[in-house]
Image 1 (spheres, helix red, strand yellow):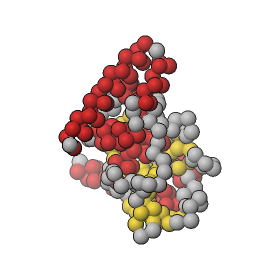
Image 2: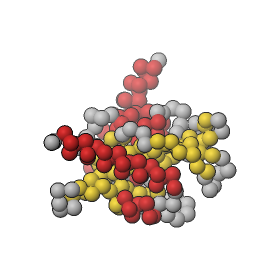
Image 3: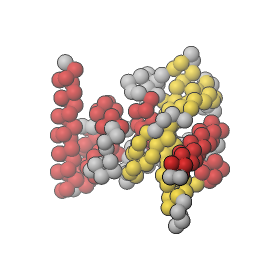
Image 4: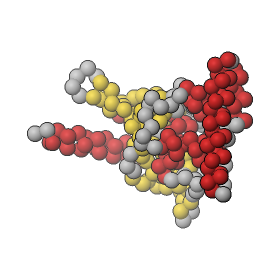
Length: 234
């Protein structure tokens, strides 16, 4: 039964991709009907695990699939949320890249997004749900909110914080994500802005202390990795 379910998902995905390619080649406006075929469940069970594979490169993401991804509604509701001793478990990512500033050194840049409600910029984050791993949740939130894909790296740590909108404590985990590709279309593209900036700029504009601490951990980790590389060359 499980195998049949996987085959059905694969068949649904292949047919959807072919239809999407056909209609996008003839009339871009007609692609909107593809949202009827691509459910959130299909995206989370098939597409997101595919993107999580380390074998996926930035060249293996066809435009048709990107258009389909933009039609997937972000997950909503609390029925799948994970809680630990009353704390809502939240997972997020710090998308990063290295920008060549014209010297032998490369400057670390991070991607921040606008908040849906209120002001300020932050890193992608959201609830960790019971039908996904922590790493899959981090990648899903990053795709939905920031529209980038890449390699999810080792956990930066765990933080406890209290949300301004909810009276309960949150248990937050953050992961670095080395960006491989920026999507032109993504689920929350109409409600969020994204912007690359330096670490100093991100710490200035982000209002959440726990996210700033996670960023500090990332910087220390990357600096140590660079030192190890330099030492190996001696």
